[in-house]
Length: 341
Image (cartoon, rainbow, N blue to C red; front, top):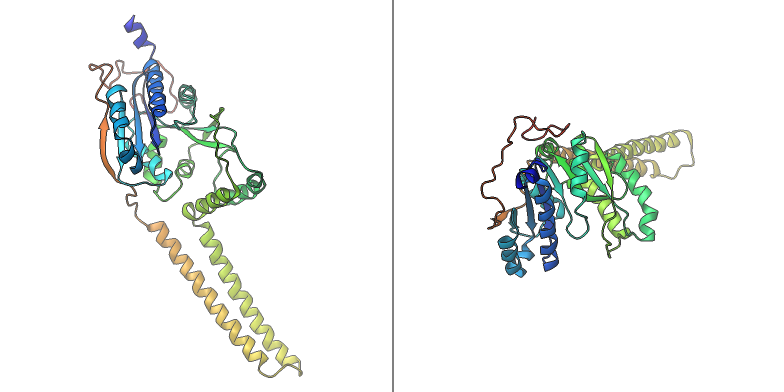
């Protein structure tokens, strides 16, 4: 009976990444539920928990309980509280699975995992979860404008995209190789060039509404930290301003030549003011171009530090090894990840 059950399991290695900003026994219940689902469906898997600094100081007992009672958990404690984009990137860098899933413990249903992996195996290297959001009225008003601005920097995510993602191994490698920690994590995924497919679902209710302030803040962060286009736009505006200033200085000279009632000193004043503004605009344009070059050439320095990593002290099958029993997998996998290329 045990052998039949094992044969029915998917032999892909699944990595689940989740971020802990706080820790409760409800989290332990959800992680245990997640582990049971993975154990019933996959031969190899891992649950990677990325914990912010505040979790370590407040919840050490809960963490020890989790590691003693839930198998296949990797607990990575960060040295400081970081942005969620950095935390997701830290999890992705440490994941070793054929398929990597970013999972929100508080909102995402567990059945999404198997559905996302099935979609990915059909040839979709990136699966994006979408769910209706709780947003304010003003946020709905500015969303179309925000969408147009983000389209300018080649950010094309489906509406109501959540943090749930399923990445094939090759898509994950592309994110790690090309991304930078100051960039938005989900934009890094979109910038790899791999096509995506959406996976609609109903997320658990979120009491926090997205406000217009959050929308503006997110849009500005996406544009400034993920593209040099705003800097280039400022550069173009600077050159345009210098060009207009030169035109106005020429206009003042022409007026002085053809009209006799021009106020004394007006031409020279306008000419020198326009000339100085033209010089300022040109200087600012060159500064913008050099800033753009610095951003493009900036090295990928580490933006996070892991204090320690702890693993579950209990294992389900001590004899289990991370190799395929057959040289070819009977399951179709068009993304050709990991061990079954």
